[in-house]
Image (cartoon, rainbow, N blue to C red; front, side):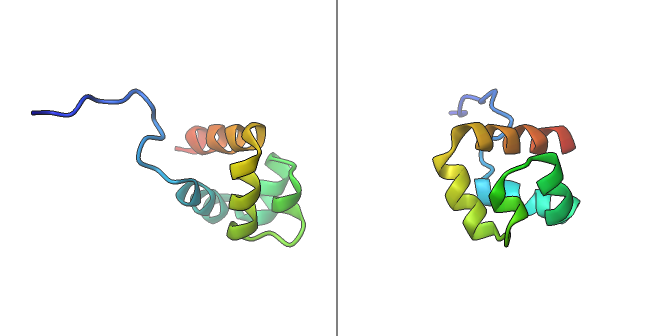
Length: 71
């Protein structure tokens, strides 16, 4: 049996992979300019960003959109 395909382009990609990829591509400084949230601008880390993004749907959607736009 084949599994049904999903139309979600982020299917199988973790939030950690998304943040890490964006940091590798843009760096924290430019990422903080593109998406102005404190976890990207003040003492940024992947761990603090994940904690914030998991609790804040509007910020997470901005990060996911930027990730899709850079792919």
